[in-house]
Image 1 (cartoon, rainbow, N blue to C red):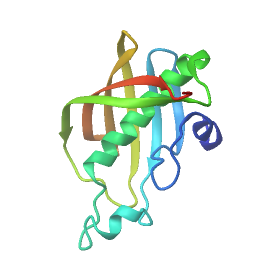
Image 2: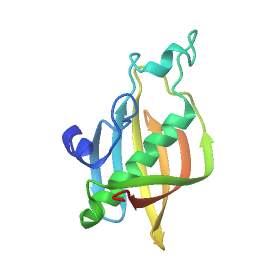
Image 3: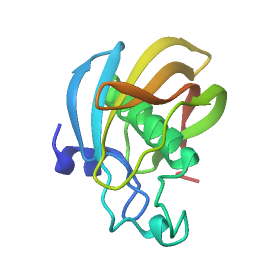
Image 4: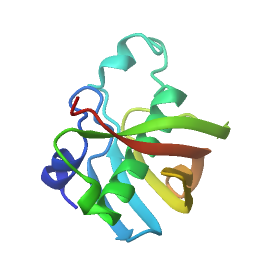
Length: 146
């Protein structure tokens, strides 16, 4: 899934789009995506000037965006111009290493179950094969046509 497909599914845009491409995917199962972390990211100006580090909340947001892509690509009939896939919960977030400019984040999300319209996922973000962050994420679709 290239950037054009990602843009067609996610409502996020610069500077908040945190997925550059999807490299692997299986319907209702898992998705692997890439985020290239560059020094040009706007948050590096203040986080932190002496040693730039990608904020942990943005790493988790990247995992949440990947769950949205997995859910929408698995159920294309639920995707419309007025629906948004929303991040509704997070559990067991852990941060193991810093993510710095020049790193490439490999984001992996796995669908665990969908109950009453809420998807439950596990996610990891890795750099060079080492876990930078992990979390359990809950998301749901909402139509904003009213």
